[in-house]
Each structure stands twice: as structure tokens, then as C-alpha cells.
Length: 378
Image (cartoon, rainbow, N blue to C red):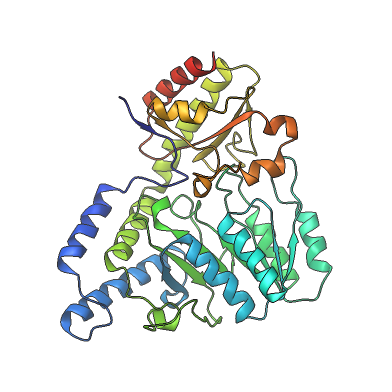
């Protein structure tokens, strides 16, 4: 059976060059970086070189990069530090953030009486900047804004520069889960002065189980857990050497080929939109995902004018991997909290599918998907 993978917002296939680097590291650079002998020193040197190379991609210093097990840990490290260590008393976020942010904010609200405010959204799921400013102006409490650069379900792009300006104007801190953006967009943290940023390697053809948190210079960090005092005391645990080196290579490949990959995927996304509109009447797109300027080129969230609870399963049985929402909710009976927030009850009763693309996606795969959708929705 033909197998087609259109769920790249959930995770991406590891690039062959990345696998090669990880394989070599596993065989030849297996030392514990905390060991003082030459095997340990070699591993430590490789990690620090990777840290420097990754930092250069964002125009920051190596000391501002903390390696983690992925985006969820990085979000937790930042949000909990903001409250426990930096004196934040209020967090402003949105109801369509990733659960790594939402659930952590809810925990902090319950356990530390943090004031949690939600910024309003327009009908497409975009942040209401006027309401954000209203919230910022309404309190003198030390505030952290937490808004993702790209929504992982509907692909909306945040007005990042505008949020940076507001955070500066009202002396608020700004944290962004950039998991869907890193490796797909150029991010210069000197030009876009975000205070805290999160990345995860498996979203840009790197390995799972590794990512990083960016803490702007000047912020001290207390660890989530204790033990070995690694990462300059910010994160105890023996470093994932081959994972870190794989992430470094994946980011290098992604950044060096960013424009070519972006152009290729943009063509794929536009072609899919055109084909969907040609073959299906009254089709709709959630968020701004069909707008090539206002959404990421990697995500298209499609709403079909029918209720078909088995469509996701049927596509899987046809060999097409897609998602009905965030992959982190897979296996649960809960619908998408993002779509529930922006759709009317009538719209939410229709069937929505998230298709997400990579540099490996082809027009032939899109054609096959259209054929199967026609068969399943006839």
C-alpha cells in the first residue's frame, strides 16, 4: 500500500545526514561529558561547539542556550522560572496555545496564585493586539506574555514585532513557543527581542527527545530537577550527546536550505488549496491557514462541509497520515481546543483535518490524497 505522510507539524522524518552524524557520535563520541578523561572531554567539547553553532543561528551567545529534552520541558523551565525565580505575578497568554504552555500556566495559577489573563482572538484565531495592550495597561504586576510564533494547529503567524513593542512599552517579559517556526523561518533575536524562546529538533528533521530553551542574557535560571548540575546548573541530567549533535546538524541543513525548502513547500500548499477548492464545494479553511502570507507554509487546516467521524481513520487506512488537531492529544476523545475556541458550534460540528507538509512532500502525494478524499467524501 502506498504510504503518504502529511503530518509534519506533529513530527518530521529525520534527515539522512542527521542520522549519519548521530550514528557516528554514538560510536565514536560516547563519553559522559561530565567525565574528566579524554572521552568525556571530547563529548563536552562537541556539545559546546554545537551550542555555539546553534546560538549563532539566532544571533545570540552560547551561554543563552540551554539544552532540554524538547519543547515541553523548555516551556516548563521558562514559565516556572518566570514565577519562581524572576518574580512574575501575572501571565498573559491565549486559549489556543500548546498544552505545554496552557497546562503549565494553569498549574502556576492554582499553586502560586498567579493571575492568568487570556488575550482575545479574532474569528480567525489571530491575537487582538488592542486587547493585549489593554491587559498590559491594566496592571502594574510583573507580567510575562506567552504567545507562540506559529500556532501548531491552524498555522497562524504571530505579529511578533508588535508584541515585542508592547512588551517593551509596558516592561513585560515575552516568552514564545517557537517549535513550529525554528528551522522554517529565519529568527534573529537581536532584531526581534524575545526574552525566552523554545525549539524542538524533531520539528525540523532532527531527532526526538532533544530541544533547547533560550534565556536572554541577564536572567538567572533555577533547575526543574536536581542531581548532576549539568548545563551550568540549569538542568541536571547527563547530556544527550548524539541527540544534541543531531539537532545541530538538522538546524544547519534547515537554515542552509531554508529558502529552497520554503519555495518548494509553498508550491505544494498552494497546489493543494487549488485542488481542494476545485474538487470540493463549500470547503473552508480554519484560521488563516489558506493565506500564504498570514500563515506558515507548512500547515493547512481544512474544514469539510460534512460530519464524518471516521474520515481521519479512513485516510489512515488508505495510507495517508494526517491529524485532526494537535498530535499531543492523539488517543484522547477530546476535540481540538484550538478549533473549539474559534469555530461556531455549526462549524465545529463539521470535519476538520490538519495537513502539514515538509521538503519531502510531492505533488504526486497531493494528487493521491485528493483522489482518496473524493472517494471517501463522495
